Length: 246
Ligand SMILES: C[S@@+](CC[C@H](N)C(=O)[O-])C[C@H]1O[C@@H](n2cnc3c(N)ncnc32)[C@H](O)[C@@H]1O
Picture 1 (spheres, rainbow, N blue to C red):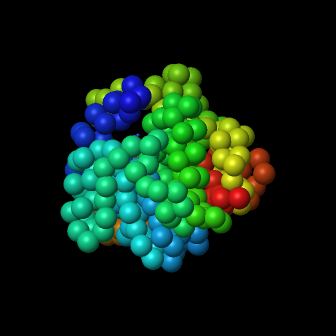
Picture 2 (picture 1 turned 90 degrees about the vertical axis):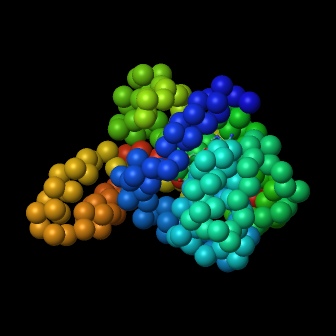
């Protein structure tokens, strides 16, 4: 097991119960990712790799679904949220499934960033193996080209969150494209502009009696149009690659 995996276990055991609260801002910035998940994964047999608390199952309609994660507490939350779905404990670099078991594999919210480069390569090889021919994959990771990730990059990708120090292995568009070179890459985009603080909006919403979440989501959707502006194309904090098994 990688040292980074041990760090990630510590982090997610600590935040499992409060996960949606801790990462609220980023989650309100996922309209585009949700749209891609629906377009790509609806009606497929899907593996949600590093599924966390299973929250993606609220957002799309797979024909069948298996969530896999290493963290037992995150899986407890997932089972509580979706008692009838299948959640398994396992490592995303060594998947406990036969070849060609799924039509879709998704790995959301930069889970691969918890693995060093050789771990990411093993993970992608495993995704390729368990996908059926023409199967689809959605992979996400932090975006080093986003100016908003510059402080993390300058600190050697070391992060401290909820009192836990850990290292993340973000990508840039060329690196991610190289990582998935066994696939046909259908889309490579940046998303997530949640560097904008949410507190002022919470305050305003309190005064005006509006729901701050829908306001923030709308703001994030507007910023999402940066992906059509060449100079701002890679401003989003995260990258997403939509790929097909060639
Ligand atoms: C940022 S969270 C993403 C969770 C979920 N995909 C989401 O969108 O909210 C990262 C998840 O990766 C899981 N994880 C980290 N290393 C892992 C590994 N080697 N195998 C399986 N899961 C792992 C963690 O337990 C955590 O639930």
